[in-house]
Length: 567
Image (cartoon, rainbow, N blue to C red; front, side):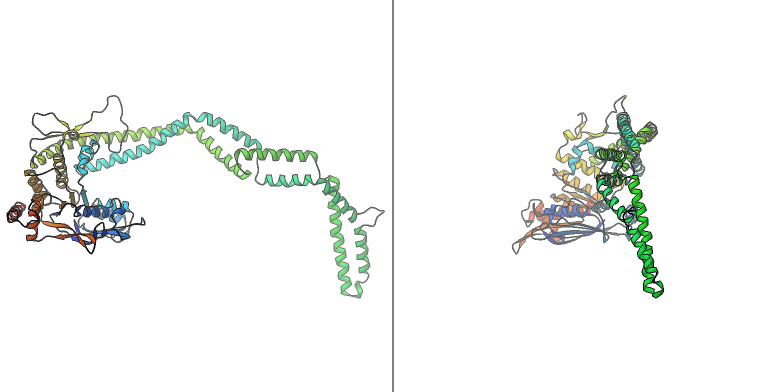
């Protein structure tokens, strides 16, 4: 159950703290006083939409904090353990929103994503908004209402069906995609084979293009190279008619060698000349080889040009460089090999597809059987609840949509069933879809009946009703009040109401007021005392400001009667 709630700068509320206890709590007040603001704050701290319109005018951020007593809740303890949060029986939820779009959530002081906060909040509090009754008008939600009334075995079966569906649908999507690819693979394989043959024949090598480009550049300057080499060779190794550099250098070395005994300097110079002689002689030999072999080879030059043309054509077709082309070649080979083995993949995945579908069908049939038995109990329980709510002659039925013969339904996470609630409010009238004939007052009572069943069967420790009494008045208002008090015997209940009967039945009553202080409108909430409750209930009965004696006497009588009924 919720112990307290604090809010700061929420709409017209500047600062507010509310404390809660066991039993039925009601919030009352004039229309427009701000009762819905409190419910909006509750929805916010439970992980609802962060509407920046909730932030009080003139401020940058707003926050709400709620403290819950979850002692004994194994689900809450397991959830917090999964999030690695220590659990001591008390859970604190905190939500902060700002105009800049920052959205801060904390669970027991630990920053968490809003999705985590929302999931935990669902284990702590159930909010039934004033428009939630419209879900009953949509048959798509009827199956959910039915399932939520089931026991733990039924819930386990629901989870198993959903898990089987998820396993199947992942396989189904892969299998369908693979079958389609397999049907279209032949054209793609032919295209890949042509490309792979072309690249295999080309035998590209990393670095090849750079080497060929350099070689081509040398061929382009071959005449210049040949002339320079010839001149260099003639200078180093001239013929008999010309004294070459080698001869002169040899003479210098010989002359200096003759002075070696006259000093270390001459000896070193002679050695250096001799070393230079041998180095220059080696250069002469290499230049002679170049002249003999020839730098320019027409056949080689043509090969280089043709090879570079091939490489650049392949680059335009497959990639910007040889490494990129080789990587693409490897990818195409993998794709080709994958297509080549696709028949085997289709067969393997197809066998798994059948196995997963069969597993889903088996669990879905079990769930249908469980729902059929559950629907019988649900119908009886609903009619008993409706009888308590003044609809004792109403016949309520859960109608299962017939499954098409000879046609398998596509698996769904919820199973193979489609249901719709049918009612006959008046004896002798045929059953008709609830969505077509239920009035506003009947919808409110139907929803309260469903919530009553949820409270009996388990569920969260705190239930919030936001004007569930819409469309109800007179004797029915008293019946609804007594039903809510009955729910509050096993669950903490918080209700926003405009009916004096429900207000009188509450264990605790809050008054929501709107005042203008120093030029600013401010909404406040306070717990009413005995005399204050009499005045507020009198006002709700139509006694103007609640001060008329007749209205106050009637209100006091209602409160006394309600106290007796609760006991």
